[in-house]
Length: 183
Image (cartoon, rainbow, N blue to C red; front, side):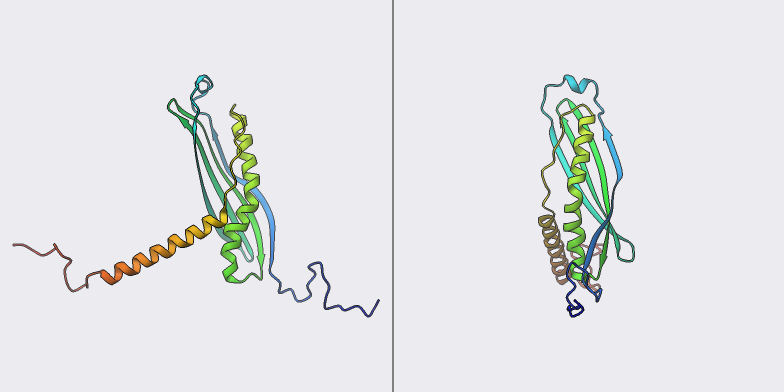
């Protein structure tokens, strides 16, 4: 048994400590607001409400190798009669990231971390809506990877537009057209 190769420990017990490591340290409700502003009249309304669902992500470094990712979801149910309910949730998680290459940091924080948080946030919203007297609202899954790619493309498009605008910008010495003094 003493002849075993100690360089291949397996089970993630790397000896060199240089492997990339990602761990969920905590998950928590950061903020939750639930409103049923039209109660009790809303329970008499026959109109089917339309839903407006918005989400936003925020990631920030809170300590060495620790990042907080906040998933903010706002749901509003509204019909011609008025607002049925509003749920505003900020659900966050602390993620330990060690030995991750810089180029992998954003995808982990803006795709994988929210993907792990979303099922819990979805459940909280479903229960909150049920507690307002309505049937549970089960949100469709969010494709965080597509949202991330879309955000990158939009940012690259803005950079390209900004670069094109700088190429077309008049020089500082000449006044812009239509700005000449007409005395």
